Length: 198
Image 1 (cartoon, one colour):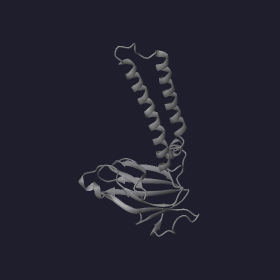
Image 2 (spheres, rainbow, N blue to C red):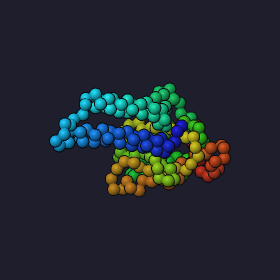
Image 3 (tube, rainbow, N blue to C red):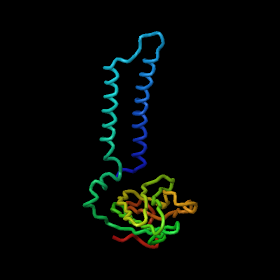
Image 4 (cartoon, rainbow, N blue to C red):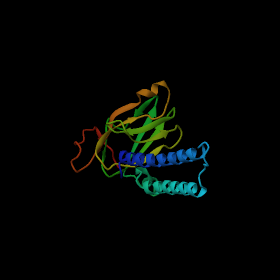
């Protein structure tokens, strides 16, 4: 699975270039139609050629990048996907209730996070140590809230609420709540109280 940070960096560059091209079209069009005392305007052939090129580039960007977005493949086959591990988390009174102080997940497993709320709408987000977000979902009371994810690199992650749930919501952070351990030795040995079970 491609790291979402890499996807974001690539898409930032691609879409910035695309927006600059659109802005160039608008600036060119505005310049041509507002020249005083000179025959202006833009020849329709040039204008529509440029617009067509932007449409082709825009659609191509979506087609090229949709497979690089980490969750797309899992979501497309969600009906037939079987999680290797299910982690059940409850939320109530602005607190996450985890199955262990630290949840340890081996690399390469499909993990289903099933989160339930007893009172308010919360968010459930997993964040890297540099505070960038891996994923998030909304947790609505009275509904099934789950998210399927595959971890392919070692790391320690915090859990945070990503939805406004009142003034007390700012404290909904569980540091070092999830540790992903890979057998290649690029992570520390598990130090948790419990390992997520299949």
